[in-house]
Length: 297
Image (cartoon, rainbow, N blue to C red; front, side, top):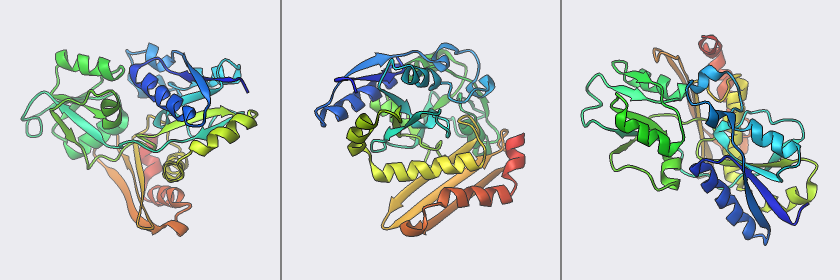
């Protein structure tokens, strides 16, 4: 292992904030590190909606390559962007404590809920869930990192946009005019970070494993099992959220038709000791209720 741990990160403001948080965590173990920004395909191609680009791991593959080629020692990802199957030779090193998971609506118009609003989002999941709740609205695409999307919103012909509250809070850019969408089921692993390393780097893996938050790791694992069992990619209209409280796991999982006309939801509590496969149980139930047909659309 190098004396200075090279932390691979995307170059956006949010990604750099996340990488600095990891850097601070490494400091608590007396480990020195440096940031190595690497640009990703998802940051370069801003014209197409993500779901039209047809590539899983669009924000992660360049970091994976850098890791495999020995240019960096660890990579920091927004976990919701990471495909459920990691490349051969790469494994989770640790998952820090999760941040806030909710989506928020940033509005330009006080009457957005009642009017025939146009809502901007690059997420198929957000658009589908929005159209299920507000069938009289319509959606348009908006791409870019957090500051770019907020800037675009000023001139875009729409009533507002949907964003993850975690990124806005981390960058201290949450506008006053916002509504927490407590009814919207977030993307699997939303609000969580994943730090990966080479499986062969056993010394590093052992040291940084002390930084793993077990509760977060359990919850996001179940959400990603749900996603994988449904055979959905990172851009599919699938939501999932697992929470642990008072010895129970509360799991909510959903798949929504692209046009918002139909939605299937699993919403159950299970004792922690019996919930080791709750993500799989949830996926099987939705598949039995027609989830596959909805995904094939």
